[in-house]
Image (tube, rainbow, N blue to C red):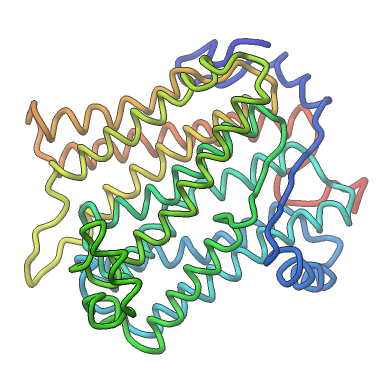
Amino acid sequence: MRAVGTGTWLSVYRVHDLAALGQYKYSAVDDSYLSLWILNPFWTWVASFMPPWLAPNMITLIGFLFPLLSYCLVFATVPHFTDSPPPWYCYLFGLGLFFYQTMDNVDGKQARATGTSSPLGELFDHGCDAVNVVITAVVTAAVLRLGYGLGTFGVILMGVVPFYFASWEEYHTGTLYLGVINGPTEGIIGVVGVALASGYFGSDFWLLPARDVLPGPALAALDAIGAGGWALNEVGVLCFSAPVIFTVAASVVSAVRKTKKGSGLALAQLIPFAVYVLSCGVWVVSAEVSDVSDAPDIVQPLVHYTVMTLVFGELVGRVITAHLLKLHFPVYGSPVLLIPIALAANSAALHWVADRGAAQAALVVAAFAYLHFVLHVISGFCAHLDIPVLTIPKAKA
């Protein structure tokens, strides 16, 4: 094992660390019945139409553009995340997310078909997934009309927590494991269903009291945990959290059992992510995201959620890079972890800088750090493997 983060303060690896890419072997297990019996045959059929000159990473990128478009439009389309989204937006989000899921699974089939499988492909694929998991959670919260506060943050947690734990588990086991019910399959299909239903029936449905809609046994269960008076959107988040908890618990058990580094050390490696979650939570609670008025401020919530996205993207990216290069786990997370810590401290206690200015300054720093990370890692992988990132190598065209 070699140390990660040496060199400049933003460095992820040293040049000689790239030699570990020669030992790369992708390993993944997907136990989802939905994937096995329905979606995988569909993905294989779609992959059969892909031209041999189209690079797998380009397929990934094309698919990623659709949820990115939904994210860029959501703040103007659904002010405050409490207004009713227009049907066309719900359809755009739902169908675009399904397209992304399809391309995210076709890219691997294209890589095998063209003989271009590589650690760069895994890095690029999981890097896009890390960003997508946050922006899709934000848009989902808007469609459910949960507001800018803890409701939306809760949905974000339901995406980032299992994703980070799965990446941490893969680092220790060498295998990316997706359970019988998992986020990339059933989770995305569930969100697609929510989006399409909101477009067809209208999103007012999610604001109905659960007591007026759900049957007696379900209400009894909700009453038992004090959620009997909740709206359907809040109950929906609660129901989605159950498989998330199970998935995370399974990741912990698997990593602790299979790690060669000791269970205590493996669990301690989760501290940077816990700091990320805690600081972002404090920031959400204490910062002024947007004034609820007739003229909504769409800039500030865009800034807030984009900062969270970029910081999470780099945190996960460093874990993936450490796995591929066989480096020590990034126990301090990343220098960008200081961003949510500083924002939380400023909003909750120090008040040195206005929330709006602090958030916008943080966005600039986070964007620079994330861009540096992406260029640093991808350029290094491309140079060492002697392959382009978005095209098929000429020798294999």
